[in-house]
Image (tube, rainbow, N blue to C red; front, side, top):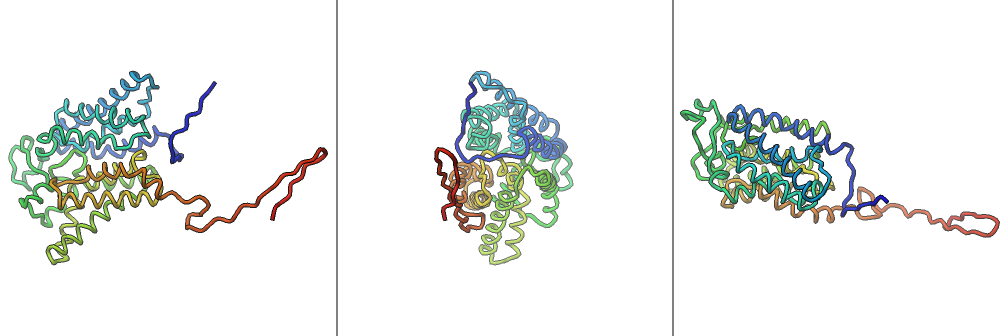
Length: 354
């Protein structure tokens, strides 16, 4: 006899299969993988491939050990692996990548019930584990990209390590100029494998929007909130709107803000399903990112902001659900007509109760 299993609400349906959605996300990340390999060399590509393979293997082993159906063919493990790799420094040791994979797919996803049941973004959970466990390798040493000698005056760029742009700005070692912003937009800067090029990230964002894989609300709310908060704070601090505009542009073009907005706050399982909830979610991510960047001890706050808001997402779903009996604009729906059925031994008739 077949059994029907009902999970906790909210319940919603998607027009595409999980495999198709994950395949589109993988395609959207290909430009970042290719450009990261071009900038940082073959070790960056090895980090991506090992991370994807590690997540697939760990998820399959976990499902076998827990006597579940092996469903790695839905590509969700591969997506988690590539996402984790793209938010890691290009020089990350491969054994360390596998540690992050284990945390991402087993602890952050598998122990919570698998795909769709996890509370926290698996890739960001894996990165947070690595960031806390190996801060020297994950948070303080960054390989400069190839071909930047003309800009940075670096020699033997493959072997040079440097702080990220955000770290340099926070310490006062770098004051970005107009010539730097084009480099930031194209992606000729130190950073994680997949977050350097805002230009390519915007192309990926448009692809995912056109294919209707993601919704625009959370990403744009996150970016707009971070930008507006930075502009107001910088303008007030320097008593200059021009200074505020420059700091805002720098905040948008550096760090993981755009990558997080495109690939992380659009995750189905760990973000709200309601449209108002997505706006609030994005607002919270952008605001916390701004607060950590400007007042916290770390130069970057995207990872922590999204993980914090992941914990709030179920509450936002309940808070922003449409009240039963009301339409989309808050107008109460008309009362349905009540029907009473009366039966006798010879006939049956329906009467409308007015």
